[in-house]
Image 1 (cartoon, one colour):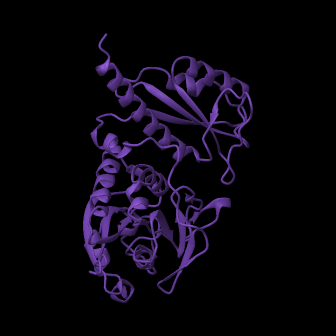
Image 2 (tube, one colour):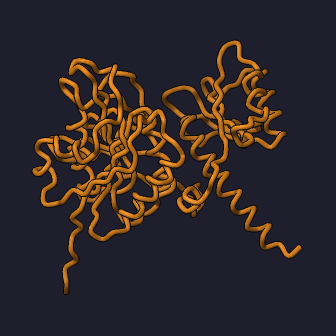
Length: 343
């Protein structure tokens, strides 16, 4: 019997962010420029990496170099495709992605939704980040990179996750909850998956589960589509009105027509009566409306007979990603049916 060769490579894909940022002064953790240091240089500056690798080799690639507040659909598509291609290689044990904190949760959810291979092939995809630039007096990026590599080569690791300040989060649950602290992320009431302690994983929850409601073919669709469906987010608040929704329904020369709205409701997805009426008019005009909550924890519980479907436990920003993907797949199915219709 021939023993299978254990995968040896950990692939690190760089996208920029604060982890790659620099400032003029080491004491400046706010006035820095993100995405200044290449991923190869970031890795070269991490002490102790060889001990954490334990025989694995690092392979790095710069996919993008941006501040994550400027994340684009084009970069999402390119990143997802590169992750998929690396996961398919027999000599790859896992993929690490360096990312800005601002939109990390959205990228993590997107990859979770479009990359079933991360679970099917029992390989991990780990996003990591930093709240302080690489030039800081005490940067948090090097430790987060070490922890991400430790997680990527951990036995049994699979699925899309994020690690920050030693805490491991599932893509479905991770959310940025603080504007400044190095420990800026939470998994809410779902709780973290585990912790990285001295280069070792302590798992306290099960590995991520696949989405049961995501249509197949999402990865192929996002890498082929020229224009993503336009889905916007509105919020409920005291004194709310129909004005924002009505403005969004108006044609914009530089943008495609509105196809979806996520409403971040108060509490259990409750809505001001004027906003609810505007959303109903949007629905009648063909706009898909989903109801989430602006609360940081918990999920919208379904209410029988409610005019709008709930977001299936997703935060507003993740619900937006899910709805864009669903609209893409539906559009592809509709066009395929029209092309095959003999009439």
